[in-house]
Length: 310
Image (cartoon, rainbow, N blue to C red; front, side, top):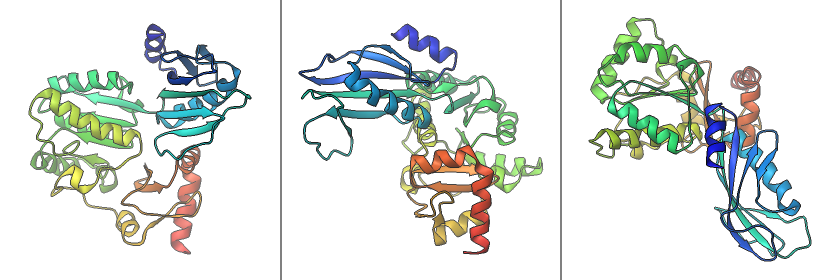
């Protein structure tokens, strides 16, 4: 099973690893049983019979789409409230219960790490352990982590800022980041492009060693891949933050109207944030976010029209 997942990962094939973490008889599954679910719904391995496979396939495919891991329970017993467990009714008459952990590998959630420094090497190692897909080109990445640390900073940053990446994180001090921002402006990088840059990368955790620095940076990378935003407390002081665009400032002041469902989103605590055409779009759920990603131009147009005629 491990070799199979490594092979799929190496070939950038989306899939999810499903592991049985609890089994209460009667059920044909057992704790530790595993299977791989491919993006087309094909199952390789064993995690129970037909009573569970339909649910597992549906949840695994959704997890692959969003990159979000899932803990699910399938049972005929009375469902209980549990925020951390997604509950489903078993289709068979059996009174058994099975809980499964679903870990997705999403091809759309790609990371490029720039640099040949010890921190960059540690970041790649941690990314592999976290099953984050590493790509060899900045043009393929949704998130870019710049860990050059004095070895080609300017070229790496300019390349990332000119790429389509949604988020660019850089291991650098506030002072160094501000100097690099000034330099990028002289090279024609505009405010919207610079707004994607986050430096320092990750929360202020007092990291010292390359391993610690990489761990902190990967915390921010994971948050961006999952559509989360770190709060100002978690990120530490942002004295050198890039200037906001007018749209971002207005969104914070008035709330942001989700162009997919029409709900007003609290921009301090959205479920997902996506950058498109120099602006930030905030979403309340996975469904709206994925719908937007399917046709961002359409929903950006709806948003702009709403702003003109609220």
